[in-house]
Length: 67
Ligand SMILES: [Zn+2]
Image (cartoon, rainbow, N blue to C red; front, side, top):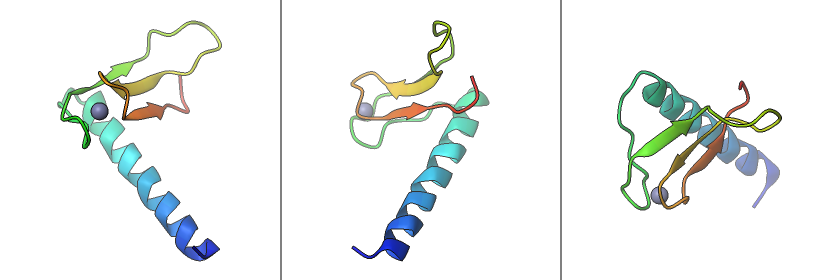
């Protein structure tokens, strides 16, 4: 895979993650594309840990940059 293509793919998944997190933050239910379980936002993490959004099975796992 050439680098330009790779960067495009990365940018696209980054935007997908951002819009997904926005929906969850608004209280909308977002389902994991793999297991169809609801993705939950977990911001109650210990100090030094990052907040994350994750489905029950763990196939979708997104770390949040802003804690
Ligand atoms: Zn899943």
